[in-house]
Image 1: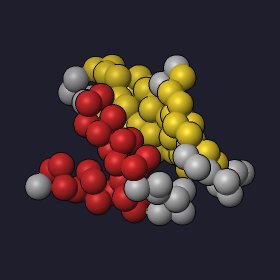
Image 2: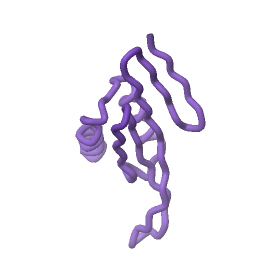
Image 3: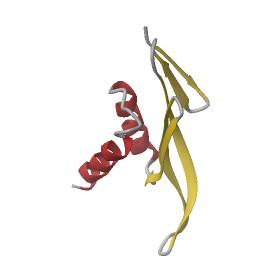
Length: 93
C-alpha cells in the first residue's frame, strides 16, 4: 500500500516497511558574478538516514522534475547523491 501526501512542499510516502520523505529546499547563495540568488536542493529522509544536497540548480522546475523522479523510483538515501550527480551531468550535456 502506497500513500502519497503533499504538505507545504514536503511529500510523504509510506509503505508497510519503509518511510521516505523527499523535500524541496531553497537557500540564498552568493555568486561572485551574479550576487545573491536563490538555489534549490532536495532533502531525502528514510528512517534515521538523512541526505541533503543544497544547491542543485537555480531553476526550481528542474529540481522539482528531479524530485518527482526520485519519488517515482523510490530512491534510497544511499544512492541519492549519485542519482543527483547523474541528473545534473545530463542537464549540462
